[in-house]
Image (cartoon, rainbow, N blue to C red; front, top):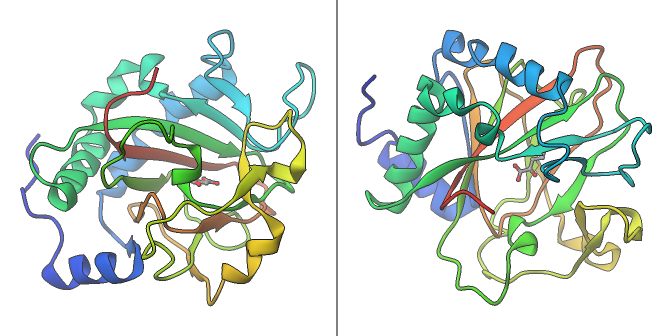
Length: 239
Ligand SMILES: O=C(O)CCC(=O)C(=O)O
């Protein structure tokens, strides 16, 4: 499988630097995206990573027996290494290399599933709020790949343009201010930073790209199909 070294046009690169995100339509062969869906669904059905602490409800208290609203599997390739051999991963890793330079590394950071009818938003946040502040973090890039069409009714990505520019981590707290919850949200008094958000609906084959300081959000899934997404991130695998 071969992917070109330069994937973004100068204009797309300029927009990424200016806005802190990109929405790329028809960017991966839809067949290459649909090819990973069976594996993705199997991981969620098997609750892969549950015992290792890699599988949890990002938006709830995550008690066994409860109904998860926003299930996440960290490092899904630990449980399905074949995901790293896919065209989808190769193309996303090449995109990260294009943005960060040829020495950049990539990993399949997480898989997030919003079940049908899930009321849970992924609240406004910066990925940098999750980083260990004692370590120096170079620029980070995430490529978000939906495994079915997405729009605002199913929880597509939404971004605040130019919110990355200060390169500051804003104050966050656990979602709902519940210390049992893994996920983070921007503190309510900072929600005035959410100015002119841009929703990015996509068909299969589209992806969004964002940086670690860019404010982003996804809404509830009001549809009858799960909202599946895989996220390829720059940097080494965690843990
Ligand atoms: O898929 C989602 O709901 C949120 C994804 C996200 O926040 C991210 O990839 O940084």
